[in-house]
Every structure is written in C-alpha cells, then in structure tokens.
Image (cartoon, rainbow, N blue to C red; front, side, top):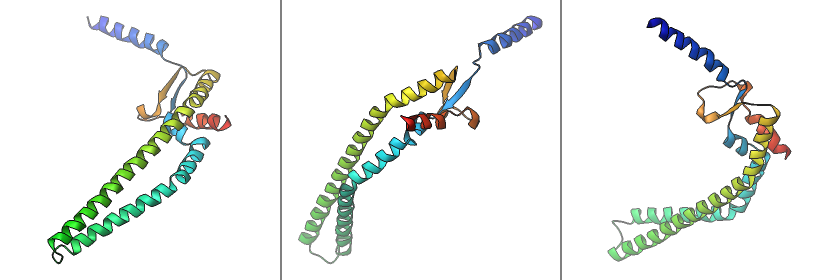
Length: 165
C-alpha cells in the first residue's frame, strides 16, 4: 500500500509539472492605470475643476467651526434664546458643509468612474497586446501574490504601452 501511494504521488508530481504554465507574470491593473500619463493629467484637470468648490467647502467648514466655538464659549454667558439661535446657525452651517462635501465627493466619484470607463478599453488593449506579443501563459493579479520578482511584473510595461497610446 505504501508503494502505491508513493507511486501515485510521484506520478501526480510528474503530470502536474507538465500542466504548469511556462511563462507566468504578475500585473497591478489599478497601479498601471493610476500611474499612466493620462491618469496624472486627469488628476490635475480634476484638481483645477474642483478648486473653487473645495475653497467654498473649506470656508463652510471654517464658518461651522467658528459657530461651534462661539456656541461653546458663550454657553454659560448668553441667554437661552441666544444659545438656541447659535445652535440653529451652527446646525445650518454644519448641515450645509456636510451636504456640499457629499455632493463634491459624489461629483468627483462620477468623474473618476467616467475616466476609468474611458480608459478601460485602452488598458485592456495594452494588456492583451503585451500578453499576445510576449506569449504569456498566465498573468496573475499583483494583489493576489505574496511575493513576485520585479522581472515578472508587467505593470511598468503596461504603463509604457498606455502612455504610447
């Protein structure tokens, strides 16, 4: 029985080595996309596009903070009506700050999703071209690996191809 188990184990090892891929690589898809020239220029464009909105958001945050500080400072000194008015002003300013912040965040997310949707075909083309031209058998997500040598990382090559498109 021991010999049969050893024989089967040896046979499986021999057969599995034939089934193994000859050319394996890893790829950080998100890393490739985010480090491309197109992504860098998109981030700069996005920064310019939302600069005024972000300034307004900072001003709203400052206003809410000042109202909160004023409320805390005058809590024991002001009349109940004054405190109630300060609370209402603070709540309004804070609510507006939160609403505008969420709105800005949603707009940014929508623009980023549109960029990714626009870039996805170009990214797929670059990846496919690299895999076909260099005859890779298996490409594994970089995030799924514990370790990989730089020599098997296709990410820089994909970035280079994306930048050429």
